[in-house]
Length: 310
Image (tube, rainbow, N blue to C red; front, side, top):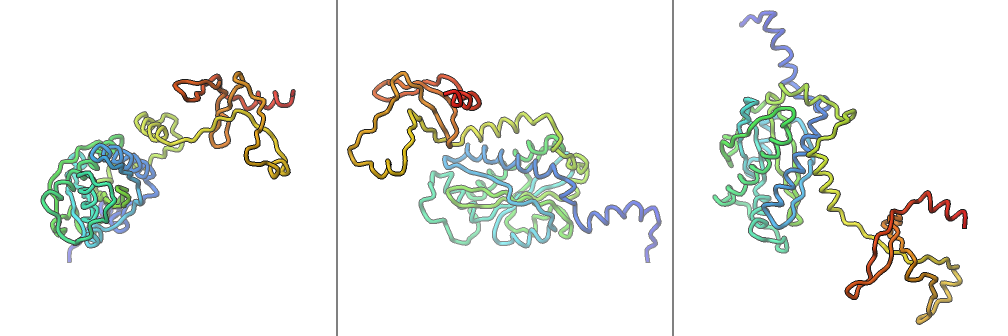
């Protein structure tokens, strides 16, 4: 029987406790923020590869044993292995075959009108290359996302469809598994990002940083948020005049009846969105169409006082 010294116990004890339960995600709140940024970066990059829009979100971040992950993927997907040089570790990206078929359809001009390809078979050489291209997009997003806490380059090593050869750490060891959901052509697929806990140990203190009290926003993050918000569609209404009616007045309305408005060409038009007044405008015409020229912002407080004085 081997004799273990007290020094060895003191050195190995914390590592054994860590390995037995994995890393606590609650103690690394910055990890969720990082993967949210990664998902947004993936959406931007995938839009450059396909005419069909791609939307990426973080479905979950969990702790799982590497062996369990590989068993779940066996026969259903391919894995890309990358070496994180500065971390002295390897990470793994995984995608299901059925979503690779969707990627192929999108990259070759498909619009999702046809039924998804449902055959269960190994990927062809072209499909493997497309899977690798997708992994490259995710890896570049990882480099950007982790730049502030653990800057590193990810060097591609290989793609494996036989997952017995895709082990990046001992199968019983734990890893952080982030599931990225990608919606493309009306279908949803998943890409798994698997990072062994050994790679995150040196970064645990930085990942424990709480951003709640931070006052300086990330410029790149702010720019991306601004761009996404700017794409939101807004419906506006131009209100020339409002008139109060009783229920009896409405019931008495007849087809062809003319309602007289007191508004004139000099009257200002109120521009509204979602029942919220935004601007005062002037009505005009150009090229056979009615136009609005923005005059000034709508001041709710001033309008309230003006109403009281009338």
